[in-house]
Structures are given as structure tokens and as C-alpha cells.
Length: 444
Ligand code: HEM
Image: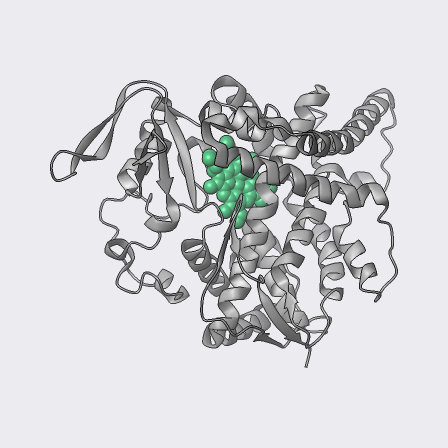
């Protein structure tokens, strides 16, 4: 396709995507484009780098995710309580916007050890409950982060001209976010130095909680690299997980049969909220809740939070399919060529998923399917190959926990808008568009 003179190749062919991401990994990079678009806020870390810089960053960050599992749920519960308090029974509520605040609060808390309290402010501004510990600087972090993300989007839309876009508003927002995170980084660096000096290594309450930042300062003391890493992870984790949750509830209220079956499964597996026979919600019990997993898989198929992506050829090469008169032969790709791969569209191909490819039907994941020779690259919500998402398990756990707790708290969800059309909001992720995910929640 030629857009404004720019030659672009777009594919939704699993074999091509497998080559881009895995079997010909060294022929492609995320390229200078990603750096130009995200660099002003994210700097140099896992998401923006290629080559040895990316390898170093990934090797350092990845192990932290398995170490963090235990406290992830405690951290999340704290913020979920605030979120559920924001829901007024029987009133139409955009659940998606609550999920965006939830993942921002739990993300900042998990990464820096302190939340930016977006939900607390929302709860207090509704006049329901007084503000607890949010202050004005915290409020600004959420706003500044949103502004920084808006300008990333503008740079993406500008394509090759991205590097020329950095207006004052963007610079101010980026600076605010950097300063906000820097404060925690400096605190952690000072703290870890003090604990290195301390021979007793006394434990206080806080040290029993897993804080990503505290773990990272044990590995490196470069303050800019640490700050960039935290912002890279926050950006990768926050909107994606919130969008997934928005789409889950969007789909459930439109499929009462699925909602009812899920409710039954959740109550059997975990029991009602705060009752004697409720069972602990653990990492393992969430993982074993099969039907919940089918719903997540189906939602990620129809509404992948990262619906398309791009790579750039670092040398002359080929992709397996698309050349020749019937487009079944390999196709030549010249050095510097951009290739977009379209996950949204691949996830809806009828030749792969069947004639009901556009329907929300979680049960399909329990059925046998002819996988052809797609090499598992026909389903890619989390990417594949060496750059596969490092937060996949983290995200599935967070989403599962949130869904279970919402079902325990509310006995009924009701659709709160009439439109038959599904509106998409495509910014950095694919979220529910229009007025969001409007739902009425009932405790009885
Ligand atoms: C439903 C939620 C999520 C989805 C759908 C998702 C999807 C993705 C995708 C498609 C990529 C590949 C981007 C690329 O290479 O161009 C990616 C990378 C990444 N994700 Fe996720 N993600 C989710 C949640 C998370 C969470 C919760 C975290 C961290 C806590 C996270 C951290 C990362 C990081 C650091 C990368 C960069 C990996 C690399 O380049 O080596 N993600 N994610």
C-alpha cells in the first residue's frame, strides 16, 4: 500500500508474522520509528531499544515478574476496594474508565511503592468518601501521563515526521512524569545504600511488600535507566490490561448466557464475598479457573489491546508469503522497509477461526480446531518470539482477580446503553469507544 508516497507492506498472515517475530528475528527491528515516537517520555529501555541495549534491559527486568507474584494480589486488592466503592449501585457507570484508574494506581504502587491515587480522588470528588492520601502532585501525575501518551499518539500519526513533534505541552508533561518517578528512584537508591551499610538489616513492614523499584536498585544504580525502565513498564502494562477488562465486561453484559455461566463458576470456585465459605483467591486458583480463562482468551482474540504493530527490515530479506502471481510465494523485502502486521484482522479470519470468527463465543477455546501450519502465530495478543510480552502472566492474573472480585461484590450486571454498534477507540491500545463500557451494577 502507498500512503502519501510512503511504501508500506501490511500482513495478517501467521507465517509472515512468525518470520518477523521469531524465525527471522535478526532481519527486523522495532526500528528508529519506535524510538522517535516513544523516546521523549520512555527514554532508552526495553520497549524503545533494539540490539544489546534491549537484551540487557529485558534480561534485567524479566525475572522480577516471577518474583512479584505473591504480593501482586494484595496490592491489587487494596486498589480494587477503592474502585468498587466508586460504583454507585444501579447507576450507569463507565467501568472501563475505572479500570484505567485501577491499573494506573496499582501499577504505580507495584513499581514505585506508592500509588498515584487516581481512584481515591475520583471517590472523594463524588462526595461519597473523603480523600485519604492523594495530594495535588499525585493528581498531576495521572494528568501528565495522559498528556504524554496523547503526544506519543500524535508522533505515531506523523510517521517519518515524528521526530519534529515535541511541543511545550509534551515537554512539560514528560518532565513532570520524569521528576515524579525520579523522586522515588532517588529514595530507593538512598534506601538501598543505607541498608547495604546496615549490618542488622532490620525488616520493617514496608520491606515485606514487593516493590519493583527496590528490586531493580539491587541490580543497577543508574538512575536514568531505572526511571526509563519503570515508565516503559507502566506504559506497557496500564492501558493494555485496562482495555482488556473493559472489553470483558462489554462482552459479558451483551452475552447473558456467558455471564451466568461465569457467575456460577466463580461462586463455585471462590464463594461469595466476605462469607465464611469463600475460598482464598490465589495465583494458582485463578490459573485453574478454566472458564474464566476461555473468556479472557476469546476477548483477547476479538479485541486485542495491541491490534497492530510494526517492524522494520534491517537488511534485504524475504517473507514467506505474498509474492508471485498468486501471492503464495516468498516476497522480497528491501532494507529499511516497514512492515505492519495486523493482529485484529488476523484474529477474525474465517479460514482460521471458522464462519463465526466475528462472534464472541468463549466455548470455541475448548473445541478442537484445525491449526493448519500456522505455528501458533495465528493467535498473538501478547506477541511472540524473543520480544513476547513479559507481563503476560501478570496481566492475566490482574484481569482474572478483578473479574472475580467484581462478581463476588455484584450479583447482577446490566447493559446501560442501547447502541447496537460496537465503537472502537484506537489510541495507544484498542479500547471500548463511544461512551465506554457503560454498565449498571447491582449488589442484590
Ligand atoms: C492484556 C494485557 C497486555 C497485552 C495485550 C500486552 C501485549 C503486549 C504486546 C503485543 C507486546 C509486544 C510489543 C512489541 O514488541 O512491539 C508487549 C510487550 C511488552 N509488554 Fe505487554 N501486554 C499486556 C500487559 C503487560 C503487563 C501487565 C506488563 C508489565 C507488568 C507488560 C510489559 C511488557 C513489556 C515490558 C513489553 C516489551 C517486551 C520487549 O520488547 O521485550 N505487558 N506486550
